[in-house]
Length: 389
Image 1 (cartoon, rainbow, N blue to C red):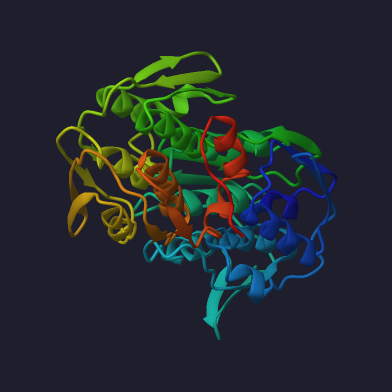
Image 2: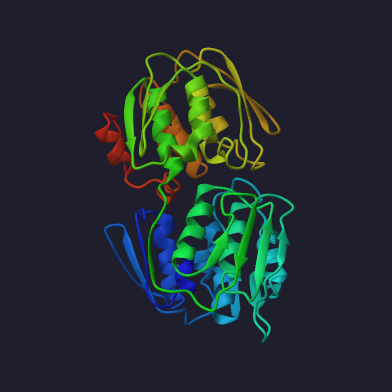
């Protein structure tokens, strides 16, 4: 969606989920002057941004808002973006985004809670960008900002997630010159302008993985359609090791289970490793496993906030820094719990599906940031679930 700041001649995205975050991003882009029409998962964008200052009230609600900084600088030569907010799962500093802008020739300073960026008269110039740590967001910022910069940009230690590949694919369809997406070294040769294009957004592999765990934890059988299994290889292998039956087809996955899960240790890693965004959901599965398992969280330093809530449901979990030890219990018990972030909210829903009794989850506004019509989808699969408010 941030690419609409760069593509002025017409830009269409399909397969866009109706989420709190996508609605917020669209509102942010509209306030910057981008015109749009959204119907049935398809958004048509037109025009270039008229404003360079983003709304504090909108940006503070979503970490991904930082992704407008580079495109605004490339498009208008100036940007004023408040420091972003979002889920409180760790520090997630924006220093790498600033590093990208400065490497490409922009001047960026922090003033009264705003990032203020300006581009010199000669414009942005390609550069070599070395990331000290892998960052999906910063890699996306670098790709978008460098697409119109003069000369060549090479990104070293780039993120390799499927969403990076999809972003590069979309830009190349619009006339950009990007190679190496999906590897740790990406090359971008700047072009003068981007052309009109249409793009179908890659499916949400985290939503697909969440439904896969729902099948495993309830000893159910779910066919998940419109998903590329290659984007979930490591996760699906882990699920197989817990005893679930995983059947892989070209554009779908079938997950079924007939007994309690076996314990299996995982370590979250950058793609293609086990996704951090499925760690909380996987922990819920391990909480009823027939033995002890260990989860090591290597991506975010504060991503075990769901643990106390699972313990309220009867789970036996102990945490030591970035490691959690889970001793499987016979069953979880329904309880009143609080969701602390997006993935924690899904992990508690999964716990509620497997628990005896009624589970009440507060804080589900987090859920709506990443799961569209979740109660409707789960109800269709036989869950007894409803939204109270």
